Image (tube, rainbow over all chains, first blue to last red; front, side, top):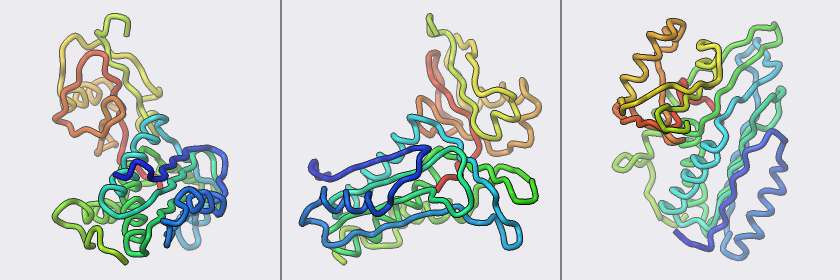
Length: 169
Length: 84
């Protein structure tokens, strides 16, 4: 892993400025960042016709930060990337608010895309956050984990990688 | 945890609701497996039954039920995560 790599983890109740985080990563990676891939996740409606009023995100302080850093550092080892930013919120979020942001800087787009997707897939199954939905009609419940998320995460395990590692894009 | 003969249990999300608390110290003189600990919690808290998929983290690392839990450990109990 490149010791000069830009590595940043943010777990906060406050909203984040995705554009500023991307600009910060770009500045930190200077001329190495020929490409930056980003992903932003937002609070969406639970289902068509079932609008979400609020999403409460419970988290495990300490383990969240460690787990996210480990996921980012695994991406640094598997692909040629110059740095990453992972931001995740907790607490009470309203409809359409930002939940999560991932940015990966690389010399080439292939590594940036793959690492960004890997980070999100690993985060969904490993980072200790739990969502509680409250719908407009007042119903409230803990969101169930989806098997499809675990299937996606498993695709990145050694021997079943869907993508060629360290291949320049 | 002065003498190390307890473990610190943390409950998250639906598990905290079903158990009715966010954590507790549990006396533990000898190491136990994660599976044994979960069985003990299920007998202590019958309300846990609806939570079919209990997961463990020991000292803030995900661990399978075969993990050995020792006095002094921090053990979190929760359902599969749903962040992102």
